[in-house]
Image (tube, rainbow over all chains, first blue to last red; front, top):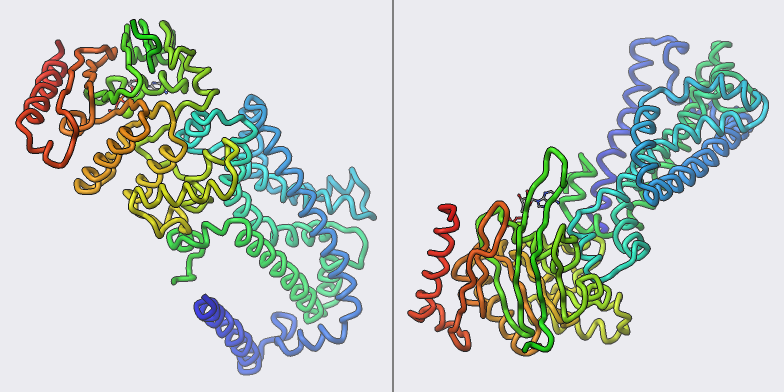
Length: 267
Length: 260
Ligand SMILES: Nc1ncnc2c1ncn2[C@@H]1O[C@H](COP(=O)(O)OP(=O)(O)OP(=O)(O)O)[C@@H](O)[C@H]1O
Ligand SMILES: [Mg+2]
């Protein structure tokens, strides 16, 4: 069990480190201008030099992304349960949700700024929440309804109530759907928060640190801010993967599912 | 005369999507009585309504006309009294429950204690020759093994009426014959009543007290063949009386197919 896990960590790790070394060397050898692409070493330098600013910005953006993520997940799951309870609502809402989900919701950020005010956190939180909400709602609702008819008939033959069927069949059936959605929206929440910040607002957040430093040609600082955001996005993704593994142990135990879900993991 | 029939179906019709373009008359004028402790097979061409008839008995569908009585109650009351055990062709195990937890699910719903449940699920696993697989997830088992678990699950609580829809369809011939013997042993031990849908002529002859041959579109009872082969053993399969019964069923099926 431990060995294959390590074996899975090594390839991406070596590719990552190797890539950074190549990046550094390429800039030195081809004499690429700093404003086009700074060296990883100078990005790391700025990371330390500007740590106070970046840490604060990372905290501000991170808390908007995370709270928006949590609220969006709660709202999505709640509505999925409501529509599962009232089937006619499901028929009306789901196609609408699928359509809205296909539109670029972050483009609404300026409008949200007008609605909720540009200075507070609510506007950007709302953007993140809207981006997170739809995939979570659509997938969870699908998992609750797309149950094999035989499984429902079996439960009915035991005289099981709707509530028992929900608990024993629909919810476990929906867990992998929910986990998939969570893996997608966790890093998306960071992207949504930063893009929303590009449309203005307080200057002490990652998105604004990136735009203002880029405007003053301090690209290495901008890249350092991007690195902070990436680290946060990765942490959220790792959290989502952990939740998936803990909540759906049966999928981890079956080879076929692992192959389906983790392309590139191999054995 | 009969104080209480296990199943009594009187003039049952089933029409799907009545009044719509895709209306299907699946069953028409079904009359069938099944005695307690009887083993009855339903056989007929594909699409003739065998599964539909089984679902009417199990109160998973309502008849369009006529009535279904089970142990002197309506089918609905029988279902609410948890009189039914069901096995489908598709094993229908829950992926998220380990094999033993799948077998224990109906016991859980009946409020059995944890200790009783695990004793029983181990007994059932021994019975279906999967003693070491309780801790596996269903997806880690082959299709035939999953089907045996689903049979173990249906038998675990000794239902008064066992409804089986092509339960052995996915099994290889040897396992199938073994499961037939086991099913008959359990049937004799528990005195349960079985309604068994199959496509296999030898299977219906080997297992049943009576074989109900259905004709298609809409499904009707074409004929009912009494089978009297005494106690079944592996030797029964080579008994001339067994072949004679199979021939009788085959001829009935032929005349159905020709559309009589
Ligand atoms: N839920 C349903 N809605 C509409 N039509 C149905 C439904 N279930 C069955 N039918 C129709 O009723 C008829 C009988 O179906 P049924 O499944 O009972 O046949 P069967 O005898 O079990 O066939 P097979 O041997 O292939 O399993 C078929 O024509 C089928 O199309
Ligand atoms: Mg069928």
